[in-house]
Length: 335
Image (cartoon, rainbow, N blue to C red):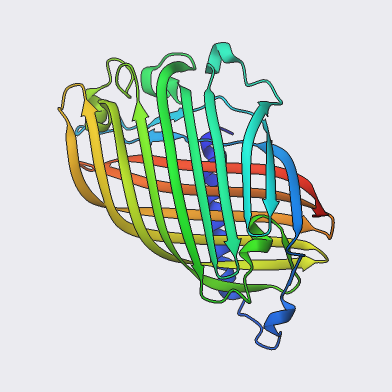
C-alpha cells in the first residue's frame, strides 16, 4: 500500500469517527465535574516517541483532451524519527531530533531532508496548535503511470514548507477535554463531546530548480505544474465537532474534525504562464485522532493530525496536506 493510500485511509478513519460521534448523544445525567480529572498544576510530563511527518503533494492534470488523466503524486522518503517533548500545565512542545530507522532504498526513492516542530497549548475552553515543517527531496510515486518509466523519478530539488496555527474554542469544555486528548495531562473518566469553533492560518510554500511537473509534461499540468516558486496564505473561520470516548479504565479515544472557509492569497512564479498574484476563497480541514492510555505517572498515545488546504487555479487543484503522526510514551513528575 502506497504512502498516499495510507494517508487517505487515516483521513477517512478520522472523519468517520467524527461522524460517528453524532450517534452518541451526551448523557446529561453525568455531572460535568465527574467527566475530567485534572492532574496537579505543578506536574511536568516528559515524552519520547516515533514520528512520521509528511507533506505529500498532488496536482491534477489539466489536459483538455483527457490524454493525461493521472495526478502527479509526490511523496517524501521518510520512515521513523525519534522525537522528544515536554508538557507543563497548559503548554507543551514536540520536536524531531534524530533518525532511528533507515529510509527506504535511497537509490530508488532518494533522500529527504526536513525540519519538524510543533507547539501546543490547551486550557479548558480554548486551545492552540502551532506547526512548522520544511521538506527538501521528493520522489514521484506514480512514475510509471505518468512517464512509463521505472520507479521512481527523483526530485531532490523540490522543496515544500508549511507554517500553520489553529486556535480552538469549545462550546462545552466540561464534556470534552482537549487537555486529555491532546497532551494527556488530564484524565477524562466519562465520555463526552463538544462543538469546536476555530480560527486558522496556514502558509504553504513550494519551490524547485526547474518546475513542479516532470520535464516534458509541463503543458499537461497547466499553471500548477509550471510553478517554479510560490506560496499560498490562507485564513479561515471554521466549526466542527469532537468527542472523547472513554474505553474503560484509563483508555481514551478522541476523534474530531473542523472545517473552515476564508480568504486565500496566491503568489506564484511560473516558467511559461507568467506570475500569479490573486485573492481567492479557499477551504481548510483539520482532523485529529488519538488513542491514549493515561495513568497517574505514565502515559502512552498514538496520534494523527492532518491539516489540509486546497489550492484551485483554472479548475486545477493542488492538495497541500500537512500530516503529523506519532506514537509516544512518557512519564510525569511533580515539581
